[in-house]
Length: 185
Image 1: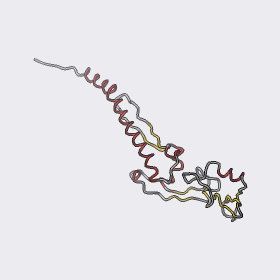
Image 2: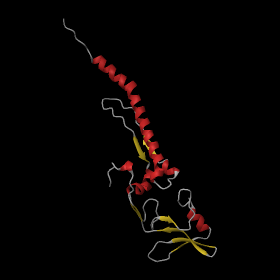
Image 3: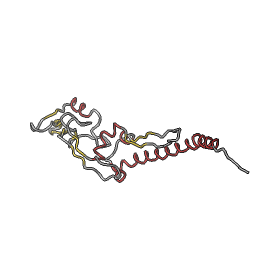
Image 4: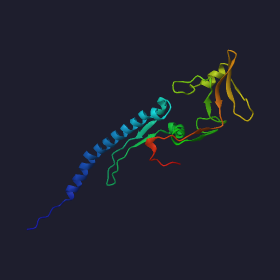
């Protein structure tokens, strides 16, 4: 007696079951894990960055996993820093030097708060601060011909230093435990 089994129908049925039932569950699990990672990175920012703004914390995004049909199924999601935030956070994470013309700098160099500046809750110059101060009588002054200008205002017989343009800002690379495995430039 000879018994034969045709398993081709079983293989097709098993593949269809995986694609229809198990595949979406895997995608859902990967996305849940990535969302947890995204939230953890945003929540950890205050421990490693000085008073991150909501804009900075909302800059942690993710590319969600999607169902992929076929024999080369690989399900993955990506937690990332969005491009606008990454352009200025690169110095906070990788260290380096920002100079004239770099992102969020002037043509003469980075703008930093002066000793008498009014800062927002995050330690930054408020939006439109320079324009408002200029409208209120402040002026850009060159104290030395080889140095960028300083935004000053006379108030109560005192010269207030509101903002300074510097040639460059140097950022040391901090010790961030979550990035020790990343390759460095």
